Length: 424
Image (cartoon, rainbow, N blue to C red; front, side, top):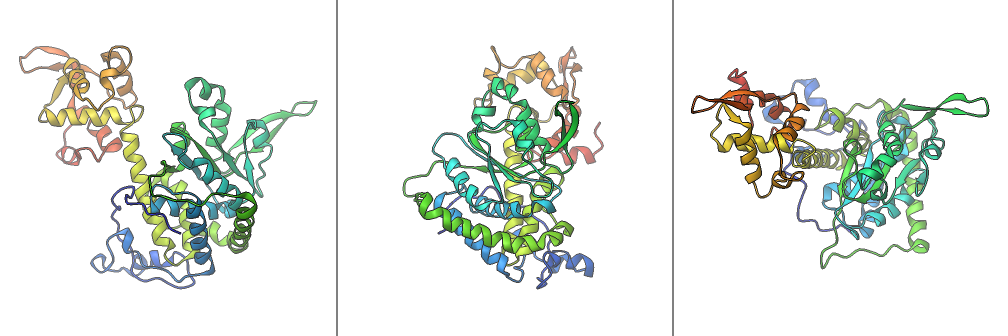
């Protein structure tokens, strides 16, 4: 049973991929053209054109798992459903990974299916460990390097929902951040003689809650933005006695397929459609897809590209992220790319946007001091600028923003042309 989701995360990213699948060699068909010097003009030019590999028993198991998940929840897009499926499978190969991707299951309100999805994950992931009212000390004492559990955190808004809550639970956030990468330990003294002891933190984790999680956790996560079911969208009620045995049986078959591939999974370095931390986070999911074959190598990369792009766009729109840079970019475009704007003018234009938060920022709207503080994080400072009437005022030069615009909000009126012209 597949849910009908009319909207995808974003337009597919463009890349060049080789044309022919190589049976029995997972992922090799994605590198063949480079090795053979194939002509780019003869290869498919989009992620959706990646050819299917040879189907395996693993690809059939992933198909079955995806159908089982779709019975109980309706994710926001087909790509999100594919990502959840691959994340579950990746938990059965945790010793192979360098990075342990988090699955951030977030929604704007109650009754969006977050807890129901965690119910399904609990019965399908490897060694589930529910962390309801569990202390960070108990969690890292439960993690072993040889066979880490899969952490499942529900109602994360009760942990991180307000600044006061987040401050009180800083150790939990630190644990979730550290556990994203292998060989990040916490040291505690144990026993009556207070002997220092290192505890492992590396473990995959699914975290569900209302509203976004802390930025540092979201940056290490495959983000599933759940939403409340619309009229006409139906799911199967979850009944423990009826559904858990079938899910556990599928989990065991998935584990039996994946575990012999542990060494092979550890050695694979797949071609990724994203870079940096996003690539670290998504790599286990893409490796699982390459091991499974069939349509999964294509589905994994399409999901990766679209969902990462959607989160980057959301980050640009968030006031604590690059939103201020993007809105300043729009102001300069609206002012016909003037060389500079006084601080007063820039603040006036920012506050005029009815859809932006700046008119209501703080007590009386965004002011010069707060603007300066936000821009200092991007190494942008105000200075004396010459106005059209030849007077000098405090303000901002447009060319001081070029590098930050290119790095943090490239989709908002691209500025590459400005850089190639040699502006400084």
